Image (cartoon, rainbow, N blue to C red):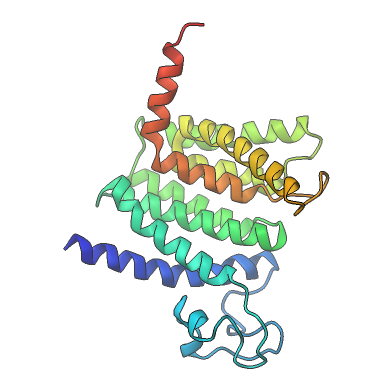
Length: 254
């Protein structure tokens, strides 16, 4: 029975991942997610139902548009598979409990903002507002322990990033600040502090790596949203491990 549930989650993740590609790209450009129908950006070819099957259509068409033969970005199947994989491993962490809903919402938020930030360096307000409202409602029925942690996390997330934005003279984007506030609802007070530390580390590590590989230059802008999202997922999935590590460090006497 559990195997079937995992399979269903994986399939749902593929479908939602395909939809999140549309949401992340279109909302970043202020476009509707309803119309027009999905089409090739090069030739305008409207995709048929057979061309919209997550991952499989990309493989069958060898990553090319049927209309003009232009290369289709591999980011589409990548985010479909990423969403499906994250959906599938979520019950391993939460079990088949109410917390699974929080995990799936968090995954959805992270995937969408990662797509939009990588595509346009924009984290759409409509996405953040939607997940903020849903997050508040979800925490009414699935509270953190203690119950106030989620709301304190949202406030702390906003204030921490707002102060960092002031200290860095605008180096921190408004979308990142609002994203931290929303994430606080999902990971709680202690969690959002861990997210901040881990996101800074990930951003620094990958920034240095990309510079070493010659992909970016020192002053090139680097979207921070994906690192924040990656950190939030790591903290959510590995929270007990991080909490145990912090307790061990706290007990060390220097």
